[in-house]
Length: 241
Image (cartoon, rainbow, N blue to C red; front, side, top):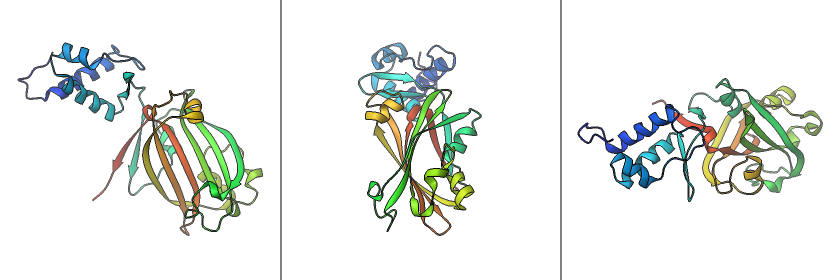
């Protein structure tokens, strides 16, 4: 029950109570939480206050809210730190958690540069497309499309096999070192083949990240579209003043 005289905001008390129940295993991973009305009645609070508590838990990646379906307990995900003075690839970030990540190449082929905006690869006519999926503990967590200008990587169609890191591959075979990365984050709904390959329901929220890697000459050497299962990764941004 809620103690309104404690000085702790009611929504915070509800948030802590639900989190405690999750930690104790009362609500396990994948389980649907009781409805807002049921929780409000149990906690002796308004539905709006319960909704605020659930929103806080969702922002922390502890639960996920699916419109029309309810609120579900998330699998503990990885926190991905973004620091101004340090670059780390997504693969490095995932593996730093100590859980092995398996990378599977789904497709690789030469495509026309019209697949990507001409502003990104000016003067380029062909790109090498690599489509991959990454799994942790057998569960799909990320799907990616990488586009690399073929004129920078002659013979890549014969050299690239199933290397985990495109950046390491570029440096090892072509002496192309990524020195800067730009990322744009969006939220999208899972649809079509992406939903199927990530084994999520159509309409489930995903992190969509447009990632551009630049070498020391400020050339874009890799453009990637990443789709990440939202419960599989959390992000924190660290800035220095």
